[in-house]
Amino acid sequence: MSQNDKKVYGLRFHGRGGQGAVTAAQLSVMAWDGPAKCFPVFGAERMGAPTAAFARLSKDADMIQTNEQVYTPQYVAVLDDTLLRDVCVTSGTAPGAWVILNTGKSFDEINKLLGPNKLNLAKVDATDLAMKILGRPITNTAILGALAKVAPLFTLDQLNEAVRDQFRGAVADKNIELIKQVYEKVEVREPVIPYDEKSAKKLEWSHIEPHYPGAKDMSIGAVWYAPGGSQKVPTGGWGVYRIDFKFENCSQCQNCAFMCPDQCIKREKRADGMWYVIGTDESHCKGCRICVEVCPGKKGIKARTAILKD
Ligand code: SF4
Ligand code: SF4
Image (tube, rainbow, N blue to C red):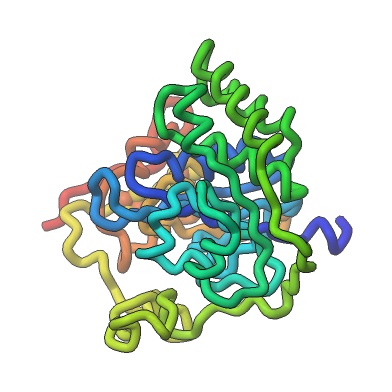
């Protein structure tokens, strides 16, 4: 495997609840030709609240094992330009990263909202096209058409195939037409700046930009990924269920590892190069039982069962 195959592409999708940012991340994984992983983060669970979804794409499965949010994205897709007011969509981006916007604004207007930056900007009025083609302001597939234009991640054919896997009949046809039109109409701010991967650095204490109001107060309660950070803080004590795991009944399908919302599935890489599920991180497991639901086990016997705590 060449060094280039170890490259990881980090994608972050910003949207509002109901706009389909999670589906966009999922479709990017489906269109990518190689191992990939995606996951969302939700704030208040209501329509219109800011949401984000992440995708990690690589040719090497070892490079996407982490379930951590993508803090230093090379590609940021913004499904709704009103988010530019509320969310720092450029957080963690290095010079030459791409920000792809669904907007009817000019590049000058976008520059004013983003402030001075060394980013690559692409824009398209995907909402307008979506209203004409889908009859609804859903732009998750559209933004991927813009992404396909500026990023070497997948071709239009690969994206269309993913859309056909996800949707059926006329819905798939309309989304493919939307993608085609977005691909043709997307505009790129010139000159294009090469990506400076070495400058991509996570903020040490928080994923909130320090210049934002309240950021200093938030730093203790926000994400702490320095050694000794939030992974050291047990959060599973309030769970009603304990998850019992039997390795001998585990088919290593990895469903639980992908579905656990709290990344509590313990895995290890063994000599054969494969990742094995070996247990549960009980100090962080909240007992939601999702892993039990999705566990096929072996020969009809689940490897995971939920046991009521005393
Ligand atoms: S019960 Fe929920 S939190 Fe615990 S390991 Fe299973 S999926 Fe994760
Ligand atoms: S879902 Fe069940 S069978 Fe699949 S890896 Fe997890 S424990 Fe094993």
